[in-house]
Length: 185
Image (cartoon, rainbow, N blue to C red; front, side, top):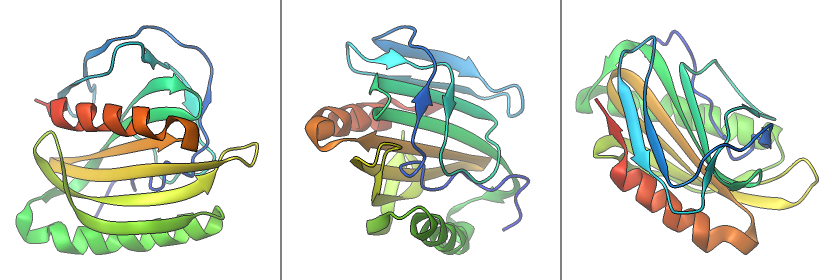
């Protein structure tokens, strides 16, 4: 697969340093200036959108980034990447193989581990695959993530649901809500 940008893989290893919080409730739709697609999803009540985030481990440059959640360690990051190849069921396996290799490399470099995956998954009905990853925040506290990759034509969507042990249930439930309500049109 040829990409103009390699996905941010292992966003769970990316320790998010959030600059500011904005709103809660529903994350409104946004149009990507590059792909022209609107992206929308619903979030749990009381969650906030974080307009700027920095990452500890990152590969490539996303077209769009949305970060929502409870605080800087208990968040969901959704990013999109423009690919040079259209993704369909026929070429999903070679893409999975490439991402799997990158996930293992970045996870190892960051001192984390892949707990499971890749397994088939969807994001708003879009086909893809999922990993469970463990890592550490910048202070050395353990965090876990559900990392999902999903594809629509020449766009890759990446979702990282990162949480501490104390907020695992809240973030996982919010991740389910976002995954089910996610729309790219």
